[in-house]
Image 1 (cartoon, rainbow, N blue to C red):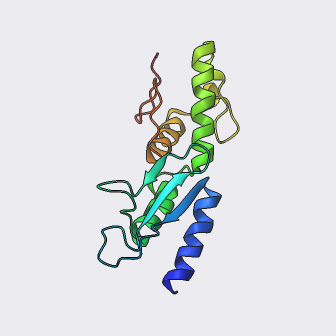
Image 2 (cartoon, one colour):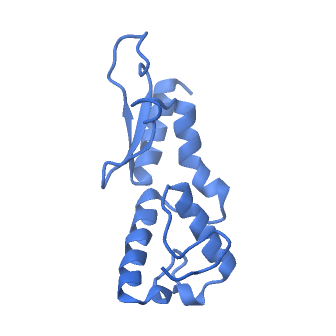
Image 3 (cartoon, rainbow, N blue to C red):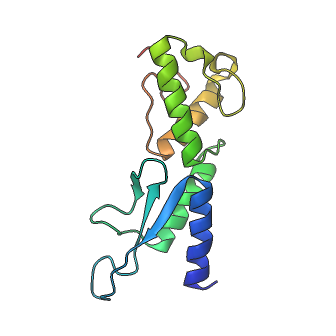
Length: 144
């Protein structure tokens, strides 16, 4: 597949996950960011990939690895939008004192889920750079 075809495929995949793939507009082939990419969230414009050590530092290989790692790393696959939504719902539930009533990605309330499933969800969230207070990846729930 050509680089342009691969770029378009990754752009579509990023969009499905609530992200946008941006390509550097630099035209100087000697510039550090020439032909490089950055992934940002569509909702909040947070940079998820390609900002270190400088803007537009990710290659297409980096982008592809980032977009596919969440499903491969854990048994739970969350898009960026789903991860952000779960994070917001969890924060609201914590403030209301009803953490165990949060509806998880499998459609069950947290109180009905196994520790193993909760740990997998926690790992999937960590894959998106989201750490929730009161959660750890060992399947334990603490008090925040």
